[in-house]
View (cartoon, rainbow, N blue to C red):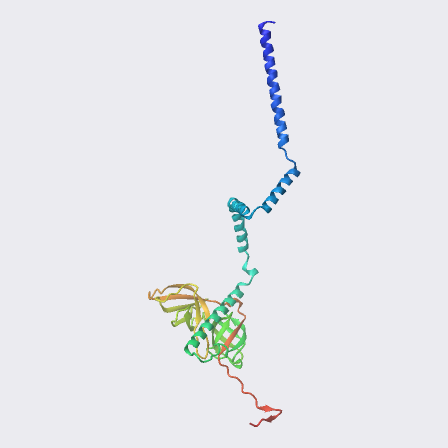
Length: 307
């Protein structure tokens, strides 16, 4: 055998060796993969075992795990919580109570607070004396609205029901105006928005006299209040107690705008928005303070009783 034949045999032997090594590595890799592959039953068993370990593990260890979990997944959890809260916040108010009913309840609450404050003042001034609640002795005459506008209403009660000029009228638990004209069975109400309506009022906690006058449309004005008094939008405006007509302050509107008077910068130009809904105002109540009561009859069985 010459030199060329021997070198050829050596190359063939080397290639054969490489093929065997390659086959060996492939066989080992396949065996390793078969060993790593886990059945579903085994995976379930491992997870169940891990759950029992966490269940019976000491509390201090599980607390640390919970804190780590919250730290890692806190951001996605907070996003889900915010989405849930925003969805709840978008729930319509009509599912709970109508806006008109809400305003009526809010006006009633304001009136109760004003009556309470009035009662406290009377107790302080007349300590030791018992006094009735401001509107306890008043009579309320309910009436239906026959016709009306943004400044006047006509109702189906009159002199026969005890109505008289100047009496205050309630609507949606707030003062809406006063009786301007009265006949035997009907009466005219001048609303607080009427251009000739003038009512003594107070703003929030300010203990100063002010007059509210209608602007002839849907609101009223307070113009002669000095700017030294602190007034802000949203303050309650209440009709003042008027002897013989109104026993306690009652809400009449809210401050909608507050700016300096253009003609006199030392005074406020305040716009007041009524708190009643004129479009849905179908009935009202006229306040009659200290109504005259009919005398009791002294006849019984057709005979006069002797004293």
